[in-house]
Length: 137
Image (cartoon, rainbow, N blue to C red; front, side, top):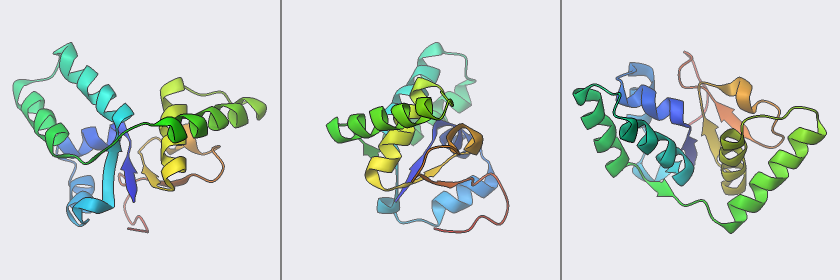
């Protein structure tokens, strides 16, 4: 399973061909977004700073995207991610820690254009669909 990070969802909505093609080539049950990513994207909608066309496209994407709830198991894994990163002296943003923990708990590949935010998370598979020639999927 591919779990899409916030930036990749935004890229798909804004028409990034590479991201859109990768997403379109997958079965519906092969990808999802975390409820955490949903919250971040919904916050973007609520801020009201998007052009009407982008607002409509993002709203449509959110209604169509398969959603995986952040549950107790994901929360435990996110706590472990935070503990591990702090132990390495590499603290990161709280939301990134939560998303990384969710993906690792699901044994999903996290799809992000911000691989540097997640590269130190042990056992987390990453793909960057913004880059050409991406393997996997």
